[in-house]
Amino acid sequence: MTQISRHPTSYPTRYQQIAAQLEEELRSRYRGGDYLPSEQQLADHYQVNRHTLRRAVDQLVERGWLQRRHGVGILVLMRPYDYPLHAKTRFTQNLLEQGNHPTSECLLAVLRPCNGHIASALGCEEGQQAIHLRTLRRVNGVPMSVIDHYLPDLDWWPALQQFRQGSLHEFIEQHIHQPLSRRQTRISARQAQAKERQLLELAADAPLLCVRTLNVCSGSDRLAEYSVSLARADMLELTMEH
Image (cartoon, rainbow, N blue to C red; front, side, top):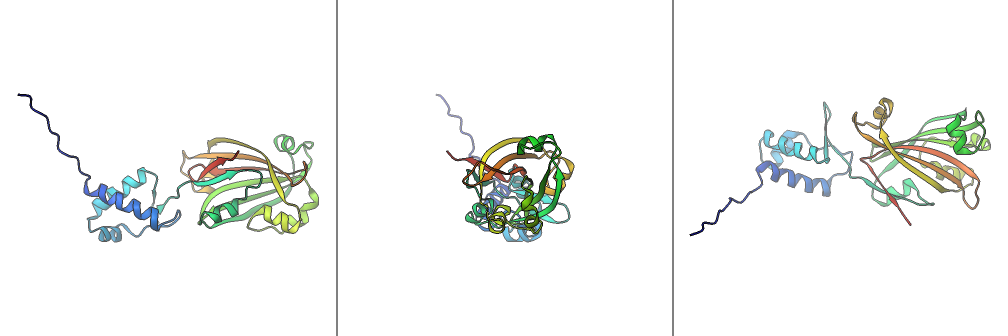
């Protein structure tokens, strides 16, 4: 008589159950950049000891939902934001429509000579002066990208010296009366350097998306801006629209 081997059903452990419940709460109640209550408060909430709670949190850290910050707490990581790439892409408006709070601040505004790489992108001679702005973008308070903007039209400099925060393209449209359109985008990836890691609050081995963009004055082929954006790859999912 043939015996059928029966294996016991595998049930989730208590910490796995807590991890599943906490993941559902992360989806419904939290946004990227929020901090969870303390481990003791979470343990009390789920009616488990701190060891069990800590194992549940560790599981979500491994899955990329949470990050432990020594001396600060448990940070909720954001899921990648969808960012479509097309001629009329607007960073701020796109993220607002997704229910987020994007901000942008100007870190640098100077006139400087173009080196070979910048001059080639702008189609000007090496050493020719251009406007250089650097902006830092945050979403829900978490740094997302740092962008170097190079603009060849020095007539724009008096107005751009007043730019402090918000959308640079909206500022140009409002104060210089010139809307811009995207003409070309190149995307690559690399590891972040030390200053970039500090600015974007990245781990040592975290990858960056490098997005190089050429923008023209809308309705013409006049080159208006070359930008180099270094964005956290864990926060951004680029969508190519055709």
